[in-house]
Length: 208
Image 1 (cartoon, rainbow, N blue to C red):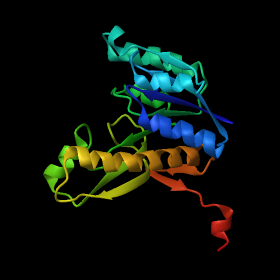
Image 2 (cartoon, helix red, strand yellow; image 1 turned 180 degrees about the horizontal axis):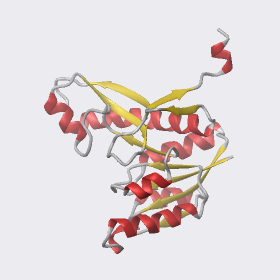
Image 3 (cartoon, rainbow, N blue to C red; image 1 turned 60 degrees about the vertical axis):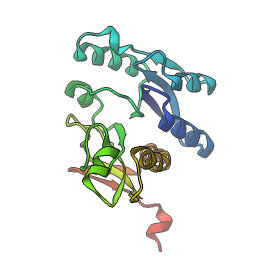
Image 4 (tube, rainbow, N blue to C red; image 1 turned 180 degrees about the vertical axis):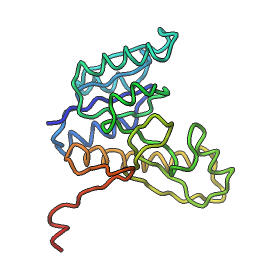
């Protein structure tokens, strides 16, 4: 039974999708805690309603990014997680923090990486005139929005799209993609060789 700690900064819609999939599909995993850097994050209310332990490490209480990260790390490690999941956690993490969870921290980014890193990804996509956009689940490394890619989902970009309409379609795919990737991790189907993620196929698929 693997333990998962999820980090949020707001409503945590991807967190909710993961929690619900874990419980409905009976993964060999436990959502050990939901931790936020904001005390007013509405996702904490949802987590409490599901009986999941919650904690707050307020980022505004720390003047240095490194001291905040150390406090956050200490809070996370109280739950001895096998996997740390970033679900709308709006902080840039220090290399020391990322290194501590190397190979066991996932993030979802609203673009088809390596395109459109950082913020305002839907605006970037529209301004670039791309025909497809999407979301990427990846392992977290010290380089922002990089790291081995676990899975991607593609959505079309329509001529009349706005940032909001495009974001809505991408988010729908995030809610499908992220739980799937987390489940693959807890079921030991993911391995990293170099910078490439390999997903093992079910035995029945290999026998076809």
